[in-house]
Length: 352
Image (tube, rainbow, N blue to C red; front, side):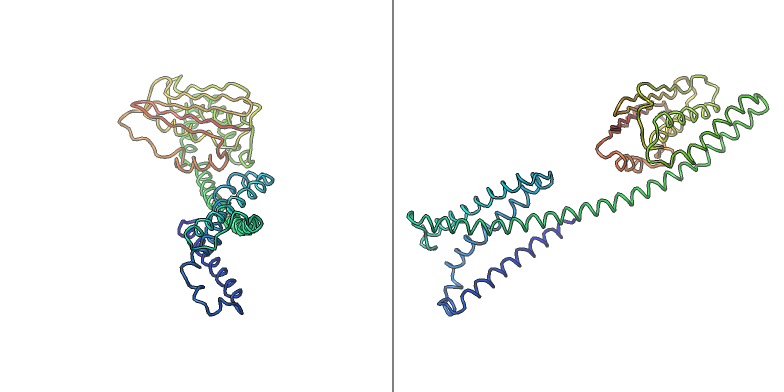
């Protein structure tokens, strides 16, 4: 919620609170000596009014609003909230009594004698009740603002998720990889039919994976890695360097499940970066998985004079990070580094 709206809500509440107090005092003054007395509009009355009903109310409201809400209500510690609320109300009551003592010492307020313990206790409890009522309104207002912010955040996340999924679909249907692979297989058909058939089978498996296997919210990490292996093998057709791309996985890869198409954009990006590099180990990919966590590392060489693509396999950097935030909020860490000739990505995901 915008700060200007929050300020307006606070101002509106205190305006209504003051109007309510004035209305109550006017009703109490009917038929009494205050009806035609100028005391009702005097400085003395205003000082007592502020010290007795306004300052403790403000203190109680913002104590509940700023401190108790975050420390106890959001953490669902209701008994502690109840106890802390009582303590805060008592402190506000003592604050009101302190105000009356100060006013009395300056001959402004009525003053409270040291022997008026019953009166002092009654006034303190009454002020504490005022503080509790305002504190409750503070909790309600803070809860409303939090609810609105969460609702707005969910709407924004849903919209961003929709945009991300659209971009992801476009990345899956990117024709460049498909056309290049088909052309390469077509060249191999006359030279090495058996090898061409094997590559065609890999392409068929990739298409089947993209069209059917990725519909689930979670898939085995083994399936994602198998897809990456086949993708790399098809990309290596375009180069004569045998060790152009090195890749390996380790750990409990069969025990981990992740969202589909999380890792492949980084692999696609690596091949785009290293497109003009013709050397061994131009691309290195490593995946390590263990119970509850996976670590994915992908690095590639590139020509320092070449401009790096601004996208991960058709997905913009911002969309990739937003998708990770949607799927693994506060459970992932993405680090991207670039020096003169090496571009590296490390992604750590807490899967459990």
